[in-house]
Image (tube, rainbow, N blue to C red; front, side):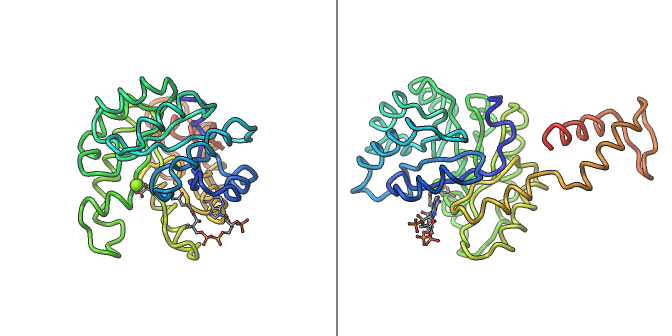
Length: 265
Ligand SMILES: CC(C)(COP(=O)(O)OP(=O)(O)OC[C@H]1O[C@@H](n2cnc3c(N)ncnc32)[C@H](O)[C@@H]1OP(=O)(O)O)[C@@H](O)C(=O)NCCC(=O)NCCSC(=O)C[C@H](O)C(=O)O
Ligand SMILES: [Mg+2]
């Protein structure tokens, strides 16, 4: 696992075509920033956005920065790969990853760590093979809902199996995994609830579309004081084998989980 992604909770997307947003992202508390060349950028701005992204990543950033390419098969993909390969972007992001073979090819052409977005039915079914070719997975819930032909407002319930498959694939390959975006820009309560849902599914963090979503996300994916205190007590109390701890059975794996939480904290 790239150690630079190990503790990432908030993943902020922004259109590379918006210079003011690039400025805001650089000053934000996001753990990872993704300059988008794909869906957030209009057709007529694809070339200028690509140049702007390459120029932006050449500057200093307090957090790791990635560029999201246009998908394989699109008219911009090859130009994106050429430019991003030569750029100072630490990571690239491939949308609509659908097979391990394609991801392997793109990662090879870029010669830099690649995060793959799982956002099609084919991508979900291939996620276990895709994950080992990557530095991490990101669930693309908008595209996935569209690909599955879910009715508007269907929510996350019909996506549960896909989301769990993405987490399983990432865990089996020991790479980090990030939940999809929350589209309602003004509903911070809803965002907080969805972050909690993502964390309970096993995601390490969440992708975001607005700086005002960052604090809630960072809070939700950080261990609480209560969790930290319990983990400390548990590690301290453990003597090996099966034991009673505060009314519950604990074994070695509970100590490992507690230790992981303390490391993250
Ligand atoms: C969604 C938006 C288009 C909303 O924009 P707007 O209504 O202009 O927002 P505000 O007026 O609240 O903006 C206030 C200032 O904040 C800056 N801003 C806004 N968003 C960002 C951002 N993401 N990063 C940095 N800064 C941001 C604005 O520039 C304003 O600043 P100023 O001009 O100085 O006043 C907009 O929020 C947006 O574009 N969000 C990101 C969209 C995006 O990147 N989409 C692609 C990734 S999501 C995706 O595709 C998921 C996946 O693929 C899937 O399938 O699910
Ligand atoms: Mg998408």
